[in-house]
Picture 1 (cartoon, rainbow, N blue to C red):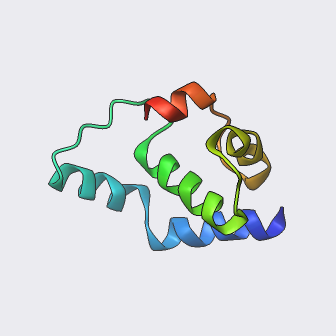
Picture 2: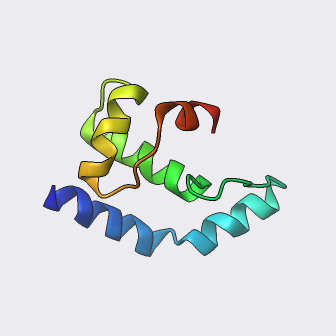
Length: 79
């Protein structure tokens, strides 16, 4: 778990939420989510790759132990 939270902090210093918002603005993408934002989605993808998670559904359960926010898999799939 410590490695995962350290990874999250490292990624967040390299690619801040403001950076993600600026990229989305340049791409003309409107992120309407209040909880599961595009930056949270990127963190989820990075953790999934690092941890070699089997599927999105199983990853949703692993996300909380990796220091990410709790999200329902249906919210993830709609994002």
